Image (cartoon, rainbow, N blue to C red; front, side, top):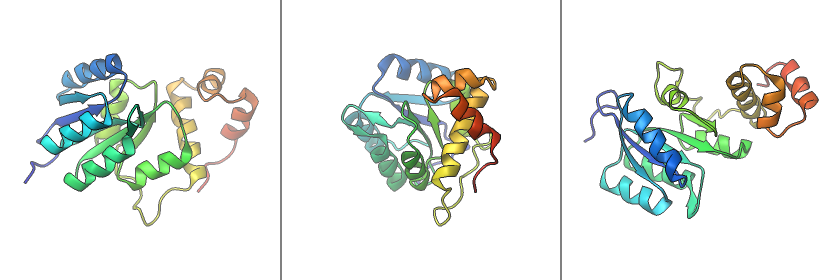
Length: 181
């Protein structure tokens, strides 16, 4: 059987952007993780077969498939593993699917090591999302994604709108509303 996630700091990073993958691995190694990297679904699946990690970071869109397939494989091998999906495409339906499959978070690129560590750890607010029986609504997932980007941009509306490819006034209207349920 596997060690508890608190003792086992093994980490698998799968991203087809090799320089990004290597930088993230170095940054997470300096934060106490034991990272391995893969640059495709095939390499990631082989790494999961060899030794399912306690933690994982999967890019959503890889040259040979979807990081969601790796999420399914990881949860089948090691249900208690904590994983984060990274994406350059903030599709709400995909965020909901990632959470249903067991992702602890869904982060939009660009992302830094501190954000990944916070998403993977319970201390950083990476509490398990609502149960699958009550997944968050698509409107709520979209709103939370917008809020996360807004905070990352230090509450700069123009920069947030640019990163979300959204008109500034549309973003201002969304930010003025209450969070959907």
